[in-house]
Image 1 (tube, rainbow, N blue to C red):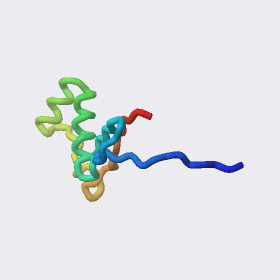
Image 2 (tube, rainbow, N blue to C red):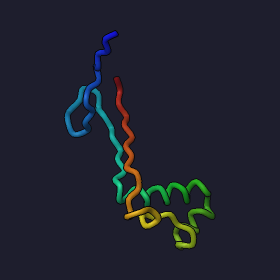
Image 3 (spheres, rainbow, N blue to C red):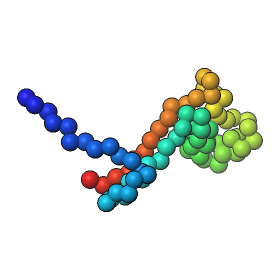
Length: 77
């Protein structure tokens, strides 16, 4: 059986016929973003705890201040 790879690189900086949207979380900012998303998921109490610093996830919660990097890609095929 022969497999042929028809995939193409996706880049949001190059003009495409169909626009590509890529949202990236870098390693350094990922922990802070996760903390805010977690606080929001907990409702108003979670947001207040996050803002006051009583209960907060930040980049300092992770080794070397690094969280996983993430990418969300929106593309039409």
